[in-house]
Length: 226
Image 1 (cartoon, one colour):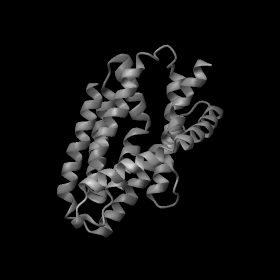
Image 2: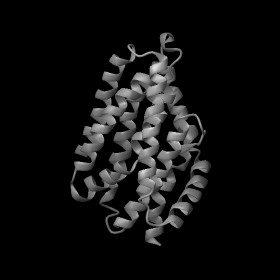
Image 3: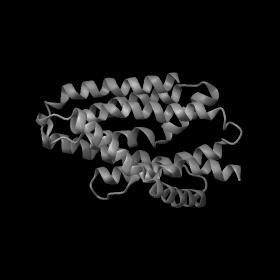
């Protein structure tokens, strides 16, 4: 769990720095920064998706994952949590800032990527933290920029990172028999597709419910078993 703990702490530190920087950025600068970050997110997503080894599994995973996600409606519950946090922590001075948007966007970005999955699995299976330590640096920098644009909501994503990556790390030992390199690669590739969708959402091009596609990331494990 060391890698996940460090990752969560760096997100919090990055957010605190972002809050200090936030008041010094104009809306025009913040918008341009966010668009630039969105392009970087697209690049990360495309790079991860192209590493996939089985296109058919990726397609089936996305289709079935979308069905499961829509039935559960993960997006609705995530939004409810975001708006609950907003009702508790938002002040009248921050009327133009959506805590829910900051929380949801940053949580998805920090959790659905290849480094999040692979790093958590390496931590649980091998006790190796190199990937998560590298991800911690990237997330820390991203959280500074995200917080400067989206506000305090980003800091709550540290809890999401801790729960999500921690669960994968703890569960990795139980699934060690079926987590082959091809399964991990396919999981990462599906995660890459979701990151592409997140980048498009950040640019305002689409309004994809990325949260409702999250089950797709774990379906390659089921296909390996059967």
